[in-house]
Length: 589
Image 1: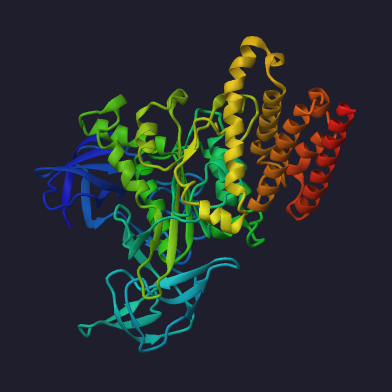
Image 2 (image 1 turned 90 degrees about the horizontal axis):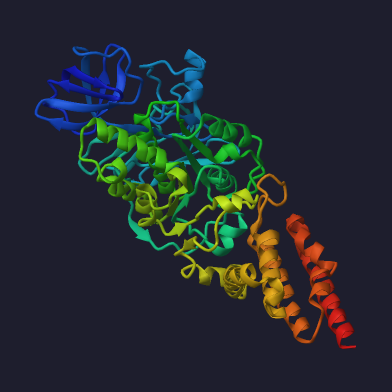
């Protein structure tokens, strides 16, 4: 261990001398309280350290001791249903020990060392195993089965494996390596957060991650293993969209990182998730969720670590063969932490004061997402989807964090303050958003939803774009100057916006839509558009067309439960056809 002394304290940055034998990113203990820090820069025998706790009271001469190890997280049973801070200290356990406020220098292991878990072996004595192979499972709760893997760097023959109740530090199996050494296997692993976990092969994403949000799943889908960004100004609904994705995304596990956002938003998550029923299991949503909270009143330096902590946990579960969705809210606060530390290190600033390496750090984070063939002889497939919220000041999408993010991600859900002002949620602007996964997913849509789905989506987007062009004409000369067909297009676009894209996150039925329900709703609206144009071409009165009684029923269809949607669709389609035919016949007569 190397020991030095503090020569300078500047907020979360501490400079210590006598640190010649340390390495970059080593974890150190600072001062008499043993505050946790990480080495960011080394010049000669001086090391610059970012401290993950409040540094008030530190002064020159205080000791700094290096642990000689990088910042690592503990991985094993006990992660699920838990809530941690940015460096994976369990917040519930800390509250039980020291109260509602985090005491500086407190050292609590991330995972419970006393609790015993039911270990069920899945390999026999004599089995040859390699890194990533699953040797057993632990049923953490009624929903989630934790798969115990051979740690990276270990392989050989299983000499002994036991079934029973064990703590995470007790030996569950022994392994004889090719060199004859015998090593004990426990359920606990450690991994450096800044190092990507290895995998066998990266695969192209080929199936969507269903979110239950119609505007996303229909127009701007994200693939399993994809990356997406949600930029938007204050009040446009970023956090609610993140919450909706965390609640309803078709992932086996959710890792939610509250990075620098307001504490009451994390409180909402903590209050809501235990009460919410998971549509896949019927159990509480918390039973497949890991929460990491580093809110705006917590140490700024720990924001930077929280992103890496979260994605390391997500990779660990991906390596077990699960589909994992990671929500980061928000990467702008993480970038602000980078900017503050960069300024204190006196580095040359880039655009708007952000460090010149901002884009490469963002890329390092998002590139850890993906669909992969994981290590191990079973050939398991796992995926990690990363969705980051971006909070540009004043909603300016040209600022550096948003622009650097857009160069990396393949899905852009651009939130529009004007839509949110009109109470249209999710406030995703369909004219500026995009998804680069749409073409790749077409085959899946045709096989799993309907062969018409891709065409419906194209028709819907065409109508919305035509509405944008016609709006300019309407503002200049009024709606009466349009042809009847164009007026039907405007009405169809209004129906798409209000009856389809607009979705109530707090309505027990409308909060989530399956692909089957979306297909039905979209087909009804497009049928109205097609039949309406045919009717006006035959001379039908356009005002009577728009006042047909079935229009109300179309508008209410999204509130129909999933199990009733087929019957409702058949009834609406029959009623729509009959009413439009009757209207056209009346006009002709």
